[in-house]
Length: 454
Image (cartoon, rainbow, N blue to C red):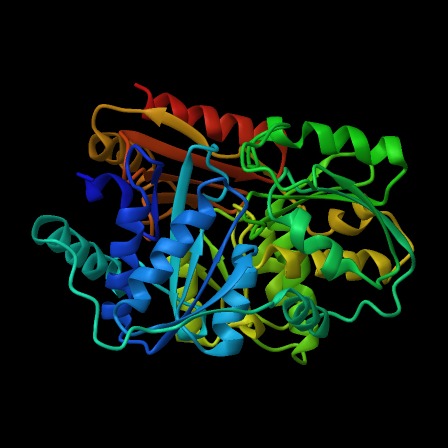
């Protein structure tokens, strides 16, 4: 096929519409290029429940095998299950998923051995160059001795590994509603939760890549509505929602109210610090709540602030030897999980914390939710740089206010802050604001928006 790789090779992964933007023939070239760039003698591949996933995965595997690489296929899996396989087997890996995107999309998340991420600066640009060459000149001839294709089950081992990292043996019985959104959580949750003192109420566990009930994107509040209704209706202790490839988890309390991912980050950070003797570095991006660094310091840890984006979190995890990292987008990264992100492990921490005391989840997370946030507000602008400069000039030199440029522009005062950062792909500025109370947050948010949209 004729393909415009600039449209499908993103900063961290490959993603596009099938078969319009890419197909199995192109997947085969990506497999061959992945083999060449990693120089690996063996790799592991897995896929989600999308209708196009098995065919794309097999084509990728054959492309790699034609370069002499032995391929272990683990079949249906969550993204963090693929990371587990990459880490446990010490092999580069490829996960076929488009995460929370609609059904017609598919993609590939790539990693090196030990689940180390592959992005534009760590091999993805080279892979794209090779594929573009081969699209013009034709695919390379298979090597004289092609690699083998074999299958392996990893779900039980993945579940056992996760349960070894969180002690759930002595928790009180809990009733939990899980909305898998017809994604891979429906495959992993029954095995991970097996044998735990949990009454599981499953929602949309049938694997269906057409997403018949709602999009598998819990970051959009519309997709949490069913779970929010079901939790109080069941008299459940909490609800958990997973995205399509089940690497992110969202939590709602016993009333059906969403728990901020920043509060989950703070809660898990406190638990991981306790597990590590009250010492360790915790990574958080700059638009997580101020609660996170406060809780980290209160529990003896060292908070490290990063730019937004999982490549920055993972790079800082590796550089600092951090034990945990969390993002506002509900990605949670663990040193004991090869610095990779796993929503399932974060969910187990929430269950352990809730089950280890008698109060409801709303009371437990209140200590980790100290501020009022705006959420992310996008504004279309003609000139991103000019608007950022206007914000700078409006606040620079004001008493008690600091500015920094780690990612866009952050303006901070003792009882509030806001960050404005440009989108890399669209003419947008993204605003996040937070303050001690609703009135202050609203005032600061509206002030910033007035300048952004002037």
